[in-house]
Length: 215
Image (cartoon, one colour):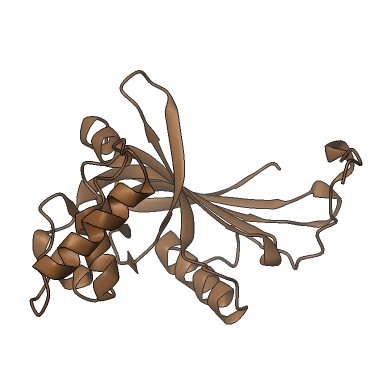
């Protein structure tokens, strides 16, 4: 247990098939869907887990993992507490970045864009698909706010269980969805000798321009 770990020597060699810009789908969201479905079929745990990066008022980046809950023609949807740290940062600066890492497939997708709130009826529809205890948890947690201890949180949860017993749990006013509207999406495929494939889509007007980047 006391053996020193040599981080400099930790590496693997990638042997994935080529990812060629001449054969990609012209729309990056469609290309994302292809890769995402392949990740699902590969049985990767939580393939919809993504790192969400935001920017604080003082210009410092902030990152955390959230779950993708919908992909549509406009972008990538996730749900959270609007009064959380991420919610407050997105309220002040709509710029955001996403990263999907599927290491079992030696693949990564990076997305940059701006966010918009989804309509409340969409948030309500998703909220009511969640397990009942998860709905109660959304009411119990004032996300990112300091609390005196876990017992405080569990007691609040028990109070809410009694309050909503036999009733439909409404959507909390501070809870809902965001959609990331991408203007740049990069697909990374690990390759031999660190000569990785990097194909980037950049939105120019209404069209996506496709380029290859050096690894």
